[in-house]
Length: 318
Image (cartoon, rainbow, N blue to C red; front, side, top):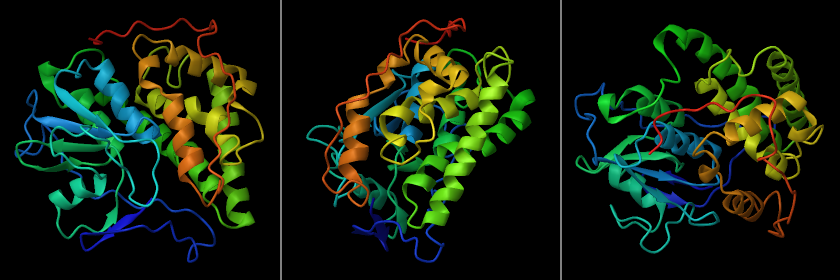
């Protein structure tokens, strides 16, 4: 995971020397809003999404693109799973919009003096020839409500529930979504222990919550569920072993495991989950954690096993 300094690419891992061994995720830089900023109106065919199938943050955007019926409205490019010295790489013909071979080239096209990490997802404006936004939480909200009649399906973060969704999102982000990375990328025992304990305390709390309700905030699927899902679906395959989040597996939490399978079995979701990319990326790219680059063959996980929760029928899928 490299970064750009004054518009030039540098292959540099995260520096935890000044943070007591703690991994701190930097803020994203491009924060424009479709349907809010006049320069970025909601138009079919205008926007292009760069994603990795391996990345949980990009996975959110793919799920919303699917469930909101935006697949014909927003085109997509998928980076290669292996990320080494050149960062995210675009295979031959993977980028019909900008014909880039490396994602950092997209960032430099948007800002020739860009400073910061080069991450996915990236939402690109084909007309303005710039990055609209590279913050996944804002991209999914744009997909949810920013495309007006171009989108279909339910609203996953309605205005009247936004405060409670935001509060739960903040806890899940700090302790679970980013928490697995804080454990996996820690470079001191104390930093790892702190992240590990907060992760499993929050998983325990959510397990208790889901004993009382089918989804995190009641009977309906909300944004909070999808933000949790993209971490949980990767948990046993990569976070349990590769990131040393090994007090329990996901399948050892009866409610969280049933909850994850229920979301996985919603029409269209399984097609957004690519375990070949997920495992190859994590085990093959993080050479400071797994120097050999060996990708484990397991585990065998049956996400299609019957669920106790009814699987929702979410309209909007094309």
